[in-house]
Length: 319
Image 1 (cartoon, helix red, strand yellow):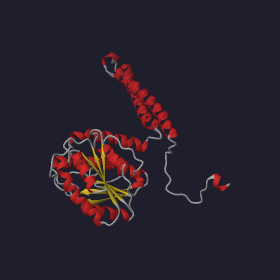
Image 2: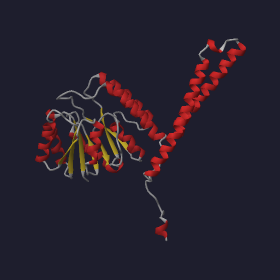
Image 3: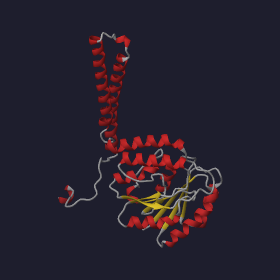
Image 4: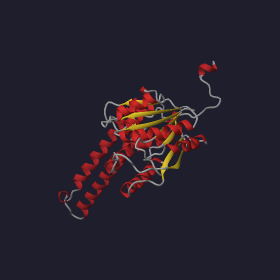
């Protein structure tokens, strides 16, 4: 079994040598085949030259230089696509993840799991980072149905077949365990070590919260409604049309039983607004339904995946 450790790098020049010195002995000590794929996400601090030097020093190191800074998700996807291992282990390049935890992740993976996620139990950050993270992890677990304590921990282990066809956008690298669970993967979580940041400053802050929330909406849609979007948009449209109907009844009641003129209340405007919004949602659902069918049929992609079959033969085989 070959292990691919993938590391997105963005302006981590001061950490690269220490990362190499701590990571390589752990992987060599495990005794199996390995590679380290370092994705340079448009670094401007001299990291590129150091990465090339590391690749010359060790043939097990692959370096992928992106043309500019695309973000952690894109860098991680590039590293995955340029890796060849049976097991993929992403980690950060800022020395906060501990390479010594990798054997534990692999051991847990081999005990019958397809995804093993790291959980930074003793997180070395202030409460201003930990509290929003706890709230986000709780919300993601509730919405996705995949319960993890720490979606933000990069250190994880995946069986390749569960993520090799995943396409990541936005901030969705943290949601990879959800994609794997959709494919029938068995997901678990183990505690891992978290070190204080030694060099530079964190690239992530509270400003990412709105983007994560929006990506969570996308995840919810992809999970529940990708193959039937009319139900997603149409339900909202029906609710809005229902509100328009009830608001209209209220306006009529006030007119005929309380003597209140339509122009004395905002109800007619609300009726119009709810009706228009309802019609727009229904039309959006119809357009999304057409696009969804085009997506599945042009790619010959089925809205399901098969784990295994018994006594099932193709017609040509039977003949």
